[in-house]
Length: 267
Image (cartoon, rainbow, N blue to C red; front, side, top):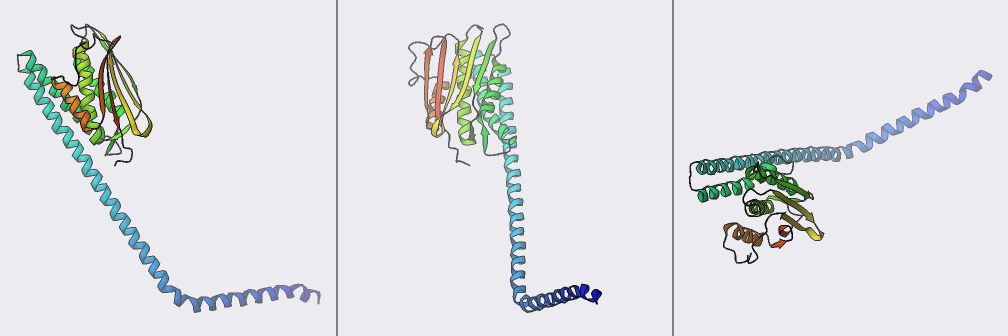
């Protein structure tokens, strides 16, 4: 009798489990036919969504590859133009004409460097102008370097990301300012220092400084009325980017400042 008493709860529990399982199976059999269409619809929508996502991803990858190829080809074409200017300058005896060709070569190179930076970056529409400015300044320094009178370059550049539409005119302006600092600030193979600074402020306001320790600009120079190609180009490009530009004489040379605004919401 004791053995039967001990196992009776086990039989009761087993019977309860079987009854519960039967009820669940019955409910499933009743409800499932009504849920099958809904489940199939959800599965189909998931598959369609997955296909659309895959199509969009493939489209973005194709566009990115195409845009990267465009930057690469533009860079190569501009490099060819630079080479043509250089070769022409090598076959010209007039020093003034040679300088014109070299100035044009540097201007085209500044544009090519933008596309080279875009080609090598993850974001194909925007570049870090600080990295670009440093690379451009070093290239200009190499082209104007004089072994007898070295000019040192000092940089204080804050990372600022901008679109290519803004980087190209800013790069051209920077090219003019640094090139003019070399040519006009240190005549007769005089050594010195060029200081390059880039800072950002509130609401996207940015300031680009190019200062040199050279002889300084003439006291009677009127920047707004100057007929030189370099300053005319700087004025025109400054208006294009809706910025402001000033060129002043300082105690230790010349200071040029460009102010402009970066729209961080541009794509």
